[in-house]
Length: 229
Image 1: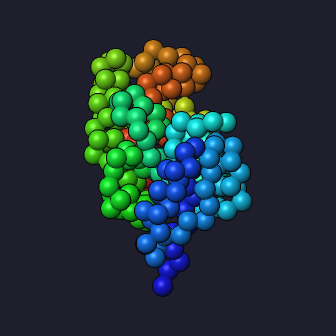
Image 2: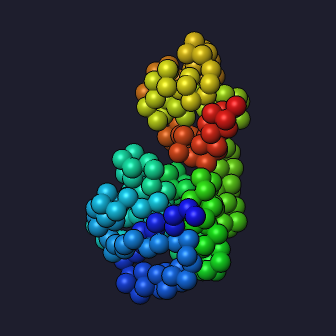
């Protein structure tokens, strides 16, 4: 029998942490290894306990949940973060995805949906509730209309641009996308010509401004798809 999924509960309201604990206590495949009431404590306990999944609130003292998620993505990428949010604006849900969270659902979700989200993320997949997914899609569509240049960029050029924005070398981008280093350089030059951008710094600024990084949902899924080919 496989070991239970180890969970860290992070929320600045003790009653919420207690409620989550009671909600999940009856599932033998879940184990709550600890809880935290602010961002700094969440980081410390993540490093100490190395949970499989963190159920993360956003608005907390001493560092918000999205900043904690971004730091963990870089320092402890094996820990998956599942955001529990009360914010439903399109801008906010896109920010949640870009933080590196592996899933998100709103706090009015049912206990059954929460357990399903935990099990899905533990299995290596992402879980975003239908409302969150709609919000991300709406925001990406708006960004495309605000940046018409995106419409003329190919999928591969978007992938290369995302890699550059995340600070990857041509070799690292080539490995991620399973293509040659020379091909990466060709895509980069073509992209610069299309956008009339002549420096890597300028290309990075464009990618960040349009939300086009490997941490956004489209680029992350494309990178994973390329690795599986």
